[in-house]
Length: 143
Image (tube, rainbow, N blue to C red; front, side, top):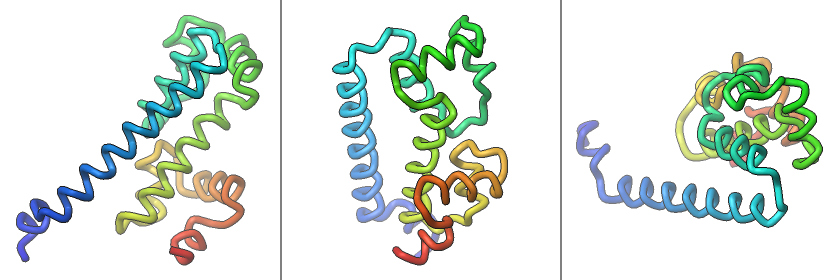
């Protein structure tokens, strides 16, 4: 098969549509869960922004500027209502996305790290191990 034939194969298209539907349904469920918690609108907006932009590197200060808040105030407001920090929330989303990449695509650890917004692969491996209890390589080997 040529690369073009592989890219347009019916199985690949079915798989792509399935992934898209899964992502949309997860986003809907996540939004419903957040809405049922009676969160302030700014916290909901931040959660939505992070879910849509987790793959981009950004800082709490940049996020605070974007939403018109002081970084410390925004961090404390987010933690008060979400019960985790902005960084932890972002890293959890990034790790979940990286697990999908590692499980379903032939990407390297470095590619997964950068694709999910981590500044470098060493930090990615540290965060992955913290959340998953194993390294990304160990995770790939369990699949």
